[in-house]
Amino acid sequence: MGAYAYVAPQSVEEVVAILEEHASSGDRAQLLAGGTDLLVQMRTVDREPRTIVDVKKLAETNRLELGGDEIYIGAAIPSAVLFENEELKALLPGLLEASDLIGSTQIQGRATMGGNLCNSSPAGDSIPAMIAVGAICDIGNGSGGRQIPVEDFVTGVGTNVLESGELLLGLKIPRPADNSRDAYLRFIPRTEMDIAVAGAGVSVTIEADGTCSTARVGIGAVAPTALLVPAAADALIGTQLDDDALNAAGEACTAASSPITDKRGTAEYRRKVVAVLCRRAANIAKQRAAGA
Image (tube, rainbow, N blue to C red; front, side, top):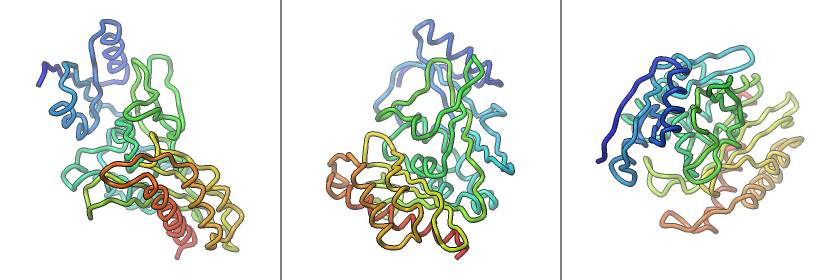
């Protein structure tokens, strides 16, 4: 392993100053939220020297608020802590299920959804689920911060929009109405703790007559980044989420996909699987929204 330094700032301003100082001097700084990806990478593919900037001590990254209009989830809150919050599980069951898929029970005690997003893997389970619920990234920097939808955050395999002197503080999510719920499903070769072959998150609003009035669909592991699929949502809106609507949404997910072939599955297989997952997740979300 290379030479490393470690700092644990107490404020966002201090983090930004450290990041900007390293950027100007040409030295490397890397943020740590849970560290479950970072520490593995440091022992395998990325052993270059750096300063590790631990953001777990910031009030902003540990903020968890369930407001009347908006939910805020700090970027450094472990998945295990989120999953213990019964109100949050009831409001965003699909997102919490996706978060609960990040590694083993031990890993979930450290892993964070914010870290999963910033790691920016095409197969990150929480990312399509975040997209489905309309999550917005709250980014801190030295000029007042900025906000960006999750679907625009990841720019490629392992890359994202964060610039020098920026960090992800947390996620802002519209609080779902009583008749709105989400679901997330993935397919993996093994029974647990594997990387997704494909994943799909769906959020729907179901009116009293059974009509779907709003929908969002996110898919993962079938393109260089997780994707929002507006055509899939359009196929669901205005319908009773019958078989025709579900099939059309699945076909839209297949059309939006641009997967690779690897040892976990062929590109053709992934295109078919993501359609199945979309249909099933939409049906689960429908049942949850309808109170079934």
